[in-house]
Image 1: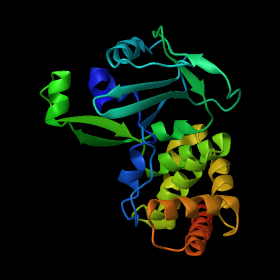
Image 2: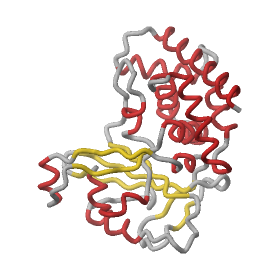
Image 3: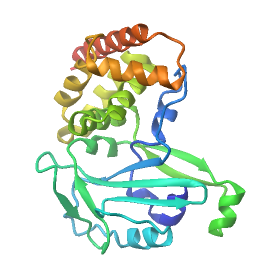
Image 4: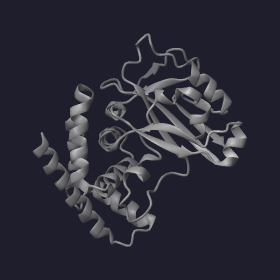
Amino acid sequence: MRFALLAGGHTDKFVVIGGLNPEYLATDAPVSHQGTTDVDLLFAIGWDLAGAEHDFSWLDVALEKGDFTSENRWRWNATLGDARVRLEFLADVWDHTADTVSLPGSRTAVATKLAGPAAALVDPELRDLPVPPSVRAQFGVETDAVTLRFANLGGYLLAKAAAAQSRMLHKDKYDLMYVTLYNPGGAAGAATAVARQLGLAGDVADPGAIRAAIAKFVEPDGAWAGVFADTMVATGDTATEAQLRTDAAIGAQTFLEVLDASA
């Protein structure tokens, strides 16, 4: 929300993929989502960065005003008020994922190439985030809320599945199954949302990537189901590890069956 105020009229230039999104998407969860101590806002800037119409000079202004610092120019950190904020700028490219790409017009920021998040840019959901009085005073604004574009359920899951396979971080595996199981439609609803998003996103989405990622949860004794179960227990879920592993496995199987039926 604070970065949105810094971005001014440019909040339509990005989509929030991770960080805040699981809490909005997984409203039927038995325990709150385990995020990091930072407010991680993951931005997919776009897959057509070479276009002459792009001008990201506004990013330099926002990063400077927020006293953001970076060691690699695509991941930026700052403390805004009482919140630690991390921004990650991504460009969706299906090869050479270790490289970075320039952001036209920006002197300080670049995007790292990561295969997968482009689907999250399609048909995002608008969410109004309230601006507390203390923040309004800090930034000298009178607005009661800011509107941001968030990845919808299908877009989030497609992006998270790609991240889980490319980055191999425990948090990505946990996030993927958490939202798959605990969105209002459960695993079947998640698959239906992904099938819809695949249809909307066309060539920028790979159905094979999410099938491969979800399939790794099918075995309850497997590592991916274990990561999900262990994190849920650590967060305070009263279910046993064995039950949570089974929930992940059944959810994965349901997801794959519904997705295949929708193809």
